[in-house]
Length: 330
Ligand code: HEM
Image 1 (spheres, helix red, strand yellow):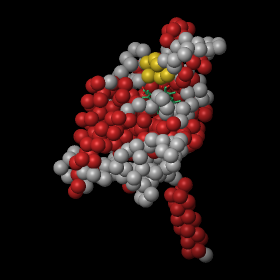
Image 2 (tube, helix red, strand yellow):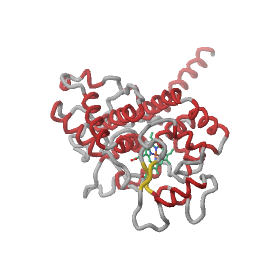
Image 3 (cartoon, helix red, strand yellow):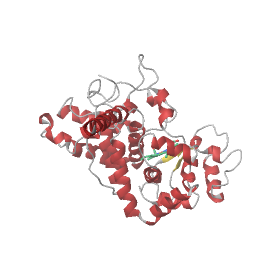
């Protein structure tokens, strides 16, 4: 009798593990630190260093591109996992890939940096380094150059062959979301409220188009926005302007990835409803205050959350591939 019940327990455990494997997209076990160091074709090329060199040059020319690369990684990983689906250009077979979604077009930038790194790598060791890994390395490198945030990231991701505009807004939070909507979108990817607060610190760099936040200015001013800050934003983003202008996310240190973001949230000087809403619950407000106080701790949490985001991998074999050109499937 005892034996039978222990068999039942063992069977249920096994069933539970199998069921869990089936529903969880995360397969970080297939990713490895220094994955390309072991590839004989790439032996003479330090793949990660090569990407870092390309990113360094691009950021020296325009630091905004670094912000674009960090955002690109987020937009890639949250939609179908980190599979470079965000890089695919429209084709006659697929006229509306992720890239054409309002969340990505025309705001997402940094594509040429990925193209440059890929072209160099294809010359050294063709068909080895995935575009998805280049995106992950490039975001890591941008965090280093713009914030002196340094972390190793495992690699071995594959590139996907599917990219659908219709999946983007189902997976990426909108800037007008409530705190609970935002938390639900992160939870859907296995990310905690604390990781959501930590990663939002990326809004200490880069820019936003006026259209992403003018609902907070017109027709009535959002009462949670600092009055003088709202005045500055109205000057930069006039109502019914013919052109969708851009403003820096952080007017204090626009090109430094830092905890200044959390000071801005506390001062009600941030662009999006989602940013300001971090103060709308005592839990997340306490995290904001702690991050504003302790930059070193925030940087460590940011690095860990970036690595975790990179573990959102859904493809572990065919139809996953190593694209020759990051903009088109093979
Ligand atoms: C929490 C939910 C988030 C929302 C609602 C959100 C929304 C947005 C929006 C609307 C923009 C401006 C796009 C434009 O109009 O040009 C933006 C920019 C940016 N976001 Fe987020 N974001 C979120 C989380 C994140 C995360 C997790 C990261 C990365 C870790 C990130 C990194 C960035 C960066 C770096 C920029 C500036 C991009 C550039 O200058 O090209 N965001 N975000």
